[in-house]
Length: 112
Image (cartoon, rainbow, N blue to C red; front, side, top):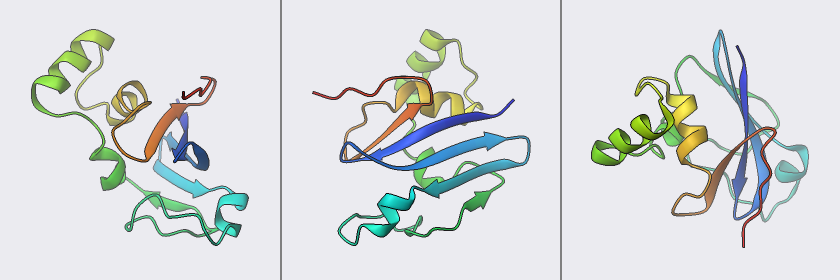
């Protein structure tokens, strides 16, 4: 089962993160790549028109997921397995501290 999320930087759609049976793919939007003033999501995810692929969740995105007692609350609240990194990312990282937000496709994104 493939899962997809939009990745926002400073409330602007920067790219799309997808998980499927082969692993993870992150690709920036054409508009975001073309904008010379836009920043990469992370230094480890440089702006490029080419998809970036990984068998495991990219370390930057994995680092957004809560740890310790917050992870326990998240797994209990949403009934997610702590090993389901994409599920946790989509459930917990819609309003992160910092510039990046992860919004599951099909979910509206409204930030005040």
